[in-house]
Length: 107
Length: 107
DNA sequence: CAATCAATTTAATAATTGTTTAATAATCAA
DNA sequence: TTGATTATTAAACAATTATTAAATTGATTG
Image 1 (spheres, rainbow over the protein chains, first blue to last red):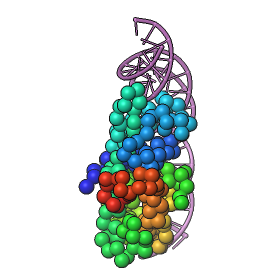
Image 2: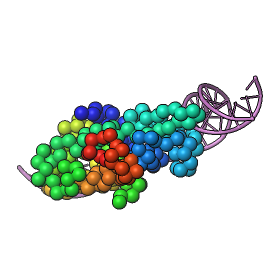
Image 3: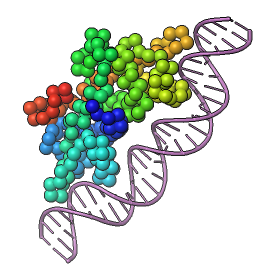
Image 4: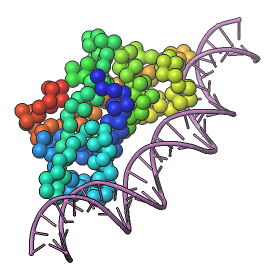
């Protein structure tokens, strides 16, 4: 089970529109990821601002980076988000799924 | 599909340890929910602080309240979190689940 | 090497957030 | 109605966060 502080960190990292945009781009991009500059361009943000956000997402474990020549490619780490969702839904309705009137995605 | 700003709001609401604690208690409590005071006691926080956090969670749509005598019962709204997860994982790996080496909870 | 390109870092500032204390509402019981 | 209980609101302050501009690092090309 993921730790509470790590979950808070991950949630905080995603709770900002530019970073949420970054994360979604990377989820769609898959394992290959995207270059920092392409992401910045797509989201209309300066390189400095983006670096700041990349760092926040990295520290939260939500994304990873790899260098390729002059470019830095970022990609999503799905397991951390998975852990986050598990943490949030743990012990749902006291463990009685029948009590939840919610699509089975969660409970 | 949930709107970006609403997702950011929900993520921000959960990105704080006391509120995350509240939400998890309410997820476990199920539809009946819990009284504000019981939650405060369980999380060792003052009533005023809790009210502030309840408001944040309410505005994000993550919890709901109902009055019962002197007590206010809060309960989790599962659909908003469900929408949040859907939003985060939309178009995962460009729509090619085989490309994701992740447990099927997400992709 | 010098020039260029991609990205990060630093410092400064503005804006937002969390907590505390004190005051206010609303409900109930004697 | 009075007093006690449950919860919210408001004001003040400290701490954190996001953005910008300028400087810096590291890799590539001529």
